[in-house]
Length: 152
Image (tube, rainbow, N blue to C red; front, side):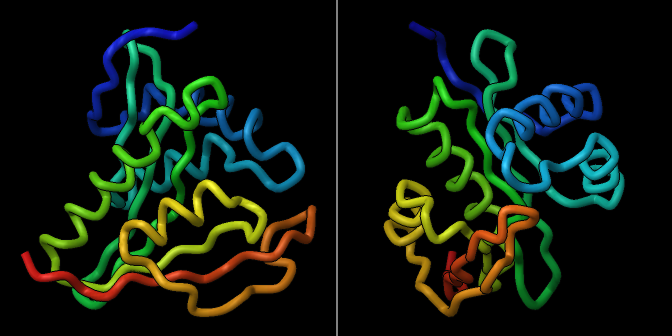
């Protein structure tokens, strides 16, 4: 059993190899992000946060934002930490950034990812539509979900 306190901190370039390992574990049937993709996201100034337990990266989340809207690019938590509130912590951190900007936020989520969909609905997201065959190469569909701008 894994124990320890989970803390959030900015994701670092040194975390990228572990991020890629997590991607390979969680998304084997699709196109896991490469190390280059993570480095590019960090270099482009997008907001990425890591969840750490006992100095081990156990999850991460990323957000791109403009003055008009924000987009959740990813939220991932290693399997043995899922269902323990880490995804909620990461989402709350992203939403706090979005709320500071006062903009709506959007995301895509696999239509079969019921725990994530429930989390998003509980945080004010609504279904906006379906993107057929969004995830490749599996061809899985995705819901597009959105949350209106919030006042802080």
